[in-house]
Image 1 (cartoon, rainbow, N blue to C red):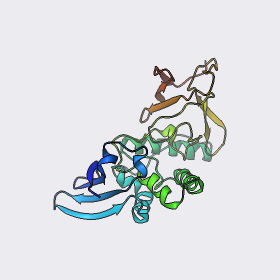
Image 2 (cartoon, rainbow, N blue to C red):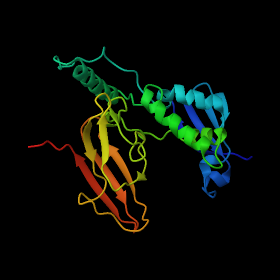
Image 3 (cartoon, helix red, strand yellow):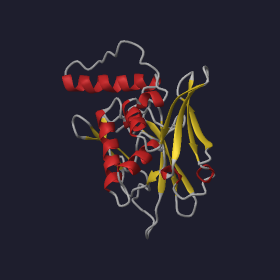
Image 4 (cartoon, one colour):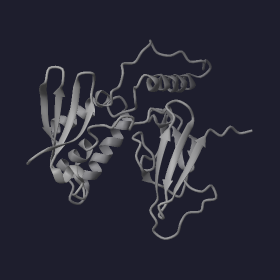
Length: 255
């Protein structure tokens, strides 16, 4: 298969992860390019050495991605010796506040919620993998290809917002996720629950506050961009008539 360079990412100061595929895949002439045969090459451009070559169905590369996904996301080492929290009257409040502060420190230092460092994120990925395995025309190889289709990772494609940290909050990843990409827009607000208390903490409205939605089988898409640390998000919603609606989501403080 004559291979063309398709995508690449800078893994660190010395290594590139390069994805090769056929010309039809690179030029998007096929319907589902991410399921077509492709190869990943890890290249050290300082020594001009090729350190590894994997197919996009490689279990070895999948294992590396699942267990060391932070390295693929250019995560910087955590600085400092932890955080001090001001909650002194409740051990659970202290744990939550400490985790929240640590999440913000992690965000500022480039440490994101991932399947490598977060058990809940790993459960989401395992559920996604099992769904593909059980699907019609699915299977283990197809699941591996779907997960490795995330590589090479585009810069800033994962959110570091503490409000998407699965250790702090639980939410339906069908509507919003750490990976910033368009999702189906639901008719009801996205609910975020405290991970430890299981109580509703806040909601994000994706459509009209009046609850109106277009009739028929119209499929709407919405993409979220969260601020790295502050309670602020921007959503861009695409309607069926190619119109776009931009919403700014800010924290509501009850009067």
